[in-house]
Image (tube, rainbow, N blue to C red; front, side, top):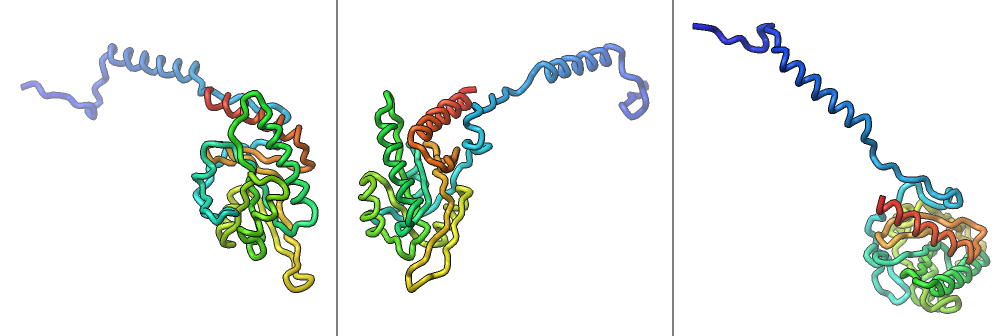
Length: 224
């Protein structure tokens, strides 16, 4: 009876099999050579230093707005959010930035097709900034603004997600102290992703112009 010879016996594979094998390798090599994953075009030069390297999806958080209502990640969905850290006893930077954000909101509203936006002021001084205090303070600038406060650990976690920071100074008298904080305005997209930050000096026209370019660029990435 004729014995079968397996692959381990050292028998050479038929020539036809080798030809097909090398033909297969050639086809695979050609595909790998000519196929390239679609690369994302670099952002415009003016967005360098404004855009994050990659959009960062924010994890859920739980804060409270000036009406005492819960504010979490879901309330960032469906609109562009401009976020600024500060506190109501801030002597200069916060009032100036909130005034600028009010102008930004008006300019965006005047666009031919204005996107849905919201301006969010995150207090990093929850000891003095309760909901009522925030409501009174923000009414000076724009009653449509949203003010957030909450437990210190929740504020800390949210601030870290933005890549920002703050530090409370020593009391100069009972209840009087300053809070040093990041002065950038952070932009969160309608998918609750941190996508950009506008550094000082802040100018309303410049912010609106850059915001429009950020939207165009991110839309082009989504369709590429």
